View 1 (tube, helix red, strand yellow):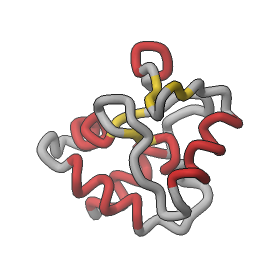
View 2 (view 1 turned 90 degrees about the vertical axis):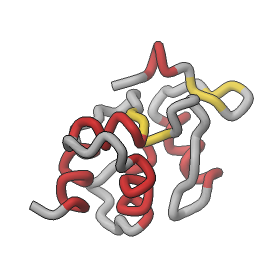
View 3 (view 1 turned 60 degrees about the vertical axis):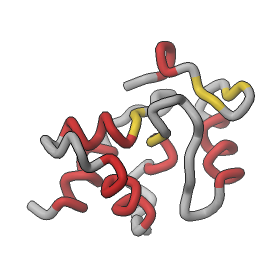
Length: 95
C-alpha cells in the first residue's frame, strides 16, 4: 500500500468531534518521522470521505487546509470542537 493510501485510510478512522496530530498519524502508519509528509499527502486529498480537517499540529494549533484555515476551523467547530486562541485542547479532543 502506498504512503498516501495509508495516511488516508488512517485519517478516515478519526471520528467526528475528535482530532489527531500529523505526528500521531505518522506513528500510526509506522513512519514516526514523517509528520510533514502526512501533511503533504493530506494537502493533495480531494476525497470528501477523508476528513483531513481533523488533523492538526502537535501543539493543538489548527494548521493548514487545502480549502483554507477558515474552512478548517468552521468544519471543526461544526463538529463540536472548541478552538480557543487558534488552538484545540488535545487532552479533550485527541483521537
